[in-house]
Every structure is written in structure tokens, then in C-alpha cells.
Image (tube, rainbow, N blue to C red; front, side, top):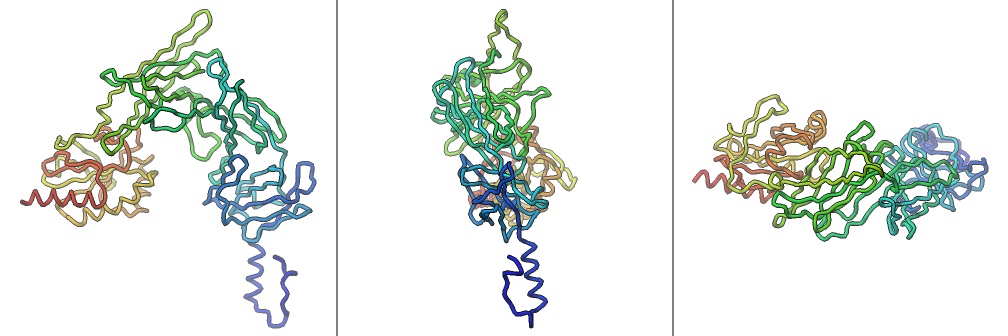
Length: 471
């Protein structure tokens, strides 16, 4: 919008109207789309992406773009997005031949032009040990370093284990192979078996090889303590050495350099290929079906893979025995374990000191979306039966600071113990909590009365306990 496009009489023009027009002009975003050689790029669609919305491009198909401010560049490459304020949006632009570019929010404020680079190409070879793997899904995800933009492309390997990813936006990628999980009853539809990072320059044609090394592999069997095979267990190997790194959200440093994983067969067998020597953490994960509900077990062990060579071959076998008992809920009527801790108010809490009252313990975390909806029910329960019901929240968030911030934001009124993070929580282990949200109801005699009740069902059960005690 320009002043020249506004036809009004000068006489009687209000100052407020002029200010409104000027603010509209300032809120617009003007720019020019060009190619790497400086020539104008006509017909380029430019999207303005707010930080609050995730803009996805999957296989050059744009997802979740409804309602976004956008513009199409003219024959000279110029474009104007009237409703986009520089500094509040990132930009994504794509021409008619699917050549595209992403501009992060921090660079938009000083933007004068968008340069659409030549697309890149990646040829990938996939091996399992030294054998090529056909029919393997290869996924390339751009590590853009921004939470509001996701760009990916996939291809399937041929009989020779080769796949070609064409028309890629230049940048750094996480290349992964993804295996579908065929077992009935398994918790996972697919798992990542290998991954590497590749950086592609504009117009570059590069190659990547996943697997096919002389490195040893790891195989074994997962059973319970009775020797019964556990099928559908996701076995994952993490590097615990200085080169390993944990996944971080939305950043270019997310994920380790290589990942190894498999899902056990019905006989409990697994095989991890191309595992380098060194110290690793092997993690077993699976959901357990218990009547109409499910619980999760996760067990981690540290192992060392020795070096191997043609002269001194090493058979790397790691059989894993998982004790399922710690992951099972307590039996109804069983005495509750001793629970002690310090509340966020610095006051001590002891379950033993609550004898004669109904105690409702619920575990939650700030990263759990389902937890937020149940929090008001626990406050209402405590306030409905003052002196008869004690509600204790146990936060398994990442840090105590986040726990306090979340409690203030959600205006949680019942007492809280911070016992996170998840992996190191002693109370979670003591009460055999495998998922959040989770609740444990302790009767006035100090015994487990019920597990994982919520809402009206929880309220009715607590009322029954109070009435039975009163009678």
C-alpha cells in the first residue's frame, strides 16, 4: 500500500487517518526475489511465518499454510506482504520449479532481497553390515535451527541399496534410515536405525553412505527374569562418550551423530549393526498391557563394545534380563511405601504423618499436555474435603525453576514436591510410576486403595473412602 494509491481530497483529511495510513505502510514487508546470478525471480510465492506457528514442507508439499500472510513476486522479482511486520515473521519462498529458500526471523528485519539458491541433490547408499538394503526409507530433515520451520524429503532405496533425494533446499541435514516395525503388539510403528549429518551447498550433488563398515555389531536376546522372551521391545544404543550428545529441541545440535536401534522379534532377539567400539548405554523400552490400561517400562544398562579385527574377531553378544516387577503397579490393599520430601514451601512432608486421612498423590510434568487438564480437579478435591483429604502433587519436570514457574502459571493450590527430572526421580521409582499423569490413592490406614483414577471417577472413589471411614 502506498500514499499514491490512496485517492482522497486534501481538504478535511484528518490527522488520525494519516497516522493510520502510515502505520499500515510501516507494517508491510517489501522485498525482491532474485536468483543466485542476480536475475529477477518472478512468480515466487513468499510466506510470512510467525514464531507461534510451525510451517512444514514435506516432499516439497507445503503443509499448515492456511491463513498465513503471503505474496507473489512480480516480473521484476518485487513483492509486498502488507500484513507482515519485519522482526515478527520468518520467510519461506518457493518458485514454480520448487526451488526454495528459508529466511529466519532474525534476518528479516534487515531484508532487502531474497536469493533463491540452486537446489541440491543427495545420493544415499544404505547397508546392513556389508550387505546393501533395498526397500529402506531414507529421510532427510533440515536442521534449520528454528522451531517454526520444518523441511524434509524422503526416498526409498532400490535393490542395490541406493536412493536419490532431489531438489533439496541447501543446508545441514540429518539423514536417517527408518525401519517399519511388523510385530503385532509392538509400541512403535517405526524406528530410526542409522543417522548421519550432511551439509549441502547450493547446487551441490553429494553422496552419503549409511553402514557398510567393518565395525562390529551387537546382538542378543531380551527376556524377563523367568526367561520368557520379550517381543516388541525397542532396543536403543546411546553413545556415553564425549562425542555423544543428547537431543535438544529445534536446534542444529539435536540428536547424536549416529543412532542404532532395533525392535525385538517374538523370540526376543535384536541386532544392531555398524556399532563402533567403546562405551555405550543400551536402553530397552516397551509398553505393557495391563487389563484395559498400559504401563511403560524403560531399563538402561552401560555396556562396552570391544574392538574387533579380521585377525581377532569378537562376537558381541549382550543378552538382557529385564525385571518387570518394578514396573508393575502396587496391588490394591498393599501398604504404601514410605514417602518423604520437601514441599516447594520448604516444609517437610511425610506420608506416615497423614494417617487417618485419604491421601491422593498425583505425578505430573510441565511438558505433559494431558496433565494440565486434570490439575484443577485435584485442587477442587482437596478443597471439597478440608481436613479429610490431602492432595500432594509431585512434579517430574526438568528443573525446579520450571516446576515453580508452571505451578504459578497454572495457579496450583495444593502442596507440591519437586522430584525431577524423570530419570532420577526416587519417588517415581518408589511408587512405580511409568507415565504421567498418574495418581495413587492411599486410604486412611496407609494402604494403596486405587491407582490412576482421575476426574469424576477419582472424586467418587475418594467420597466412598471418606464415608466408609466415618461409618
